[in-house]
Image 1 (spheres, rainbow, N blue to C red):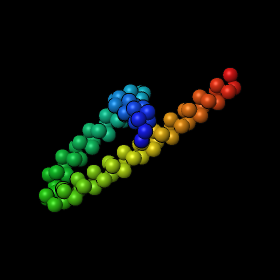
Image 2: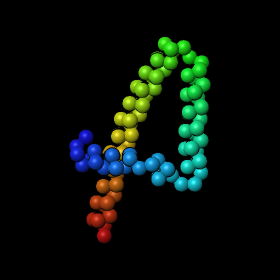
Image 3: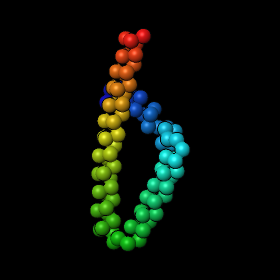
Image 4: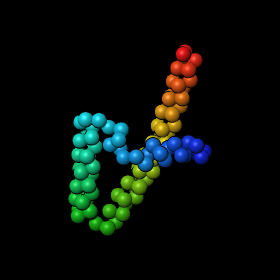
Length: 92
């Protein structure tokens, strides 16, 4: 990613997720985080060391893929915003 896009992406991603949510969405995010943490603790108690290692590797790979999907979505949103801004300028 070039420096400008990297800076914009880092700025957008460094703010709290709640900054972009409203109303019930904030409660849904908090509930999902609590649920994730509870399931993580349960899995750590249930799985043996090899199973837990495999699960952690799967989670790491899934997180990496999700990270690239976030970058792609960010770039798409940025492109849409730039197109809309250019369209607005041309119309006004």
